[in-house]
Length: 126
Image (cartoon, rainbow, N blue to C red):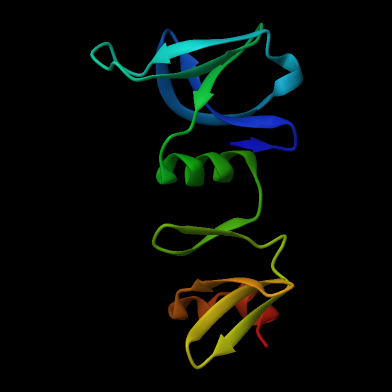
């Protein structure tokens, strides 16, 4: 995942992912090679190498969620398997079909009804 010219990456140390995440600036990447997540895995993923940092792409929803929490950002979990960038939400629509995060121009996503108690949701509700 690339955010503002930076890769949201899982940090690698001693040929293992360490469960920490960072934004790795693409301008600092010296080369990209392939990385095996474990020794028995045939599928390999890109590894981004700079002088002081090695990262690989995040591959699961939970890793993306944790990575975004680690590096900042306004992505909040609004349902199972749904992260919403509240920097882009214009308003929350309360409709007979449920709650929707509205990004403008008719682009919206349904969010869990129980999120109506969250202060950020309340502040944007129409």
